[in-house]
Image: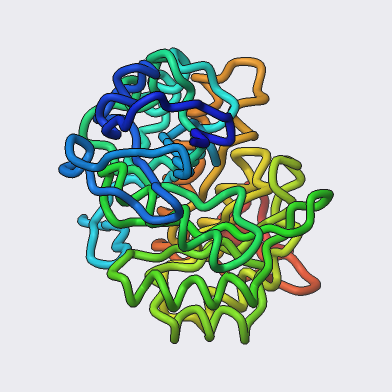
Length: 64
Length: 257
């Protein structure tokens, strides 16, 4: 699996919610794209990730 | 007198839009408070793992967030970033910023028109950053933009209103708020833009590169307010090639000869 461009080997399927927790993101401060499609926050607990997936986790930063 | 800025039906009392880049998180709050800012732009980037501090924790409550699509090189990428920004849960306003050129950071009007159409149709309040070109501005208005944001000079340059005459054309011909974005480096330039009839001014680098950042935020606030007042007051006429006494021409302390 790819998370923000970095390779991450999954030993077993994992939900987006667990990935966010493990990586130390704040769920209320990120948005998630799975294989190019936005996943609504309400689905983080049910969507399972596998090694073929590409995940982008984004947030706001200062910018003009 | 009520003089609200109306962007896509949202009303604001402040006409100073702040770009939130280049500040420390602690400074962000002081700048917003000193500047009386009600709208601040943000960028969307890959999140840093490990629960780092988030800019949203430093933005005063009640402030309207205006995500930008910086990093986008075409309409498709801008739309993707705008969708992610909306998913982040801070409303439906978006500043479209599409830049292919990495030296001058000038916007691509063609791609911006495309993105404006798509995002306006998706229900966004769209504010395109643009080169002040009349036909492009008309296309953006027709595509559903809620304001246009022509540049004064290249982003981050602090060079001021280099596009002055073209911005005036935007003001005269486009029936949308015209917000000068980019290049404004001094409060006097912000004031001039407002005097000309701009609806608001956006600034970031001018404040972030100042010696006293919070005080410069205040200076911009006052300059923008002064320029707005001057615009509403309708500046006086200019005499081409003579003077006109301001004091009475009678009652001098000598007898007339």
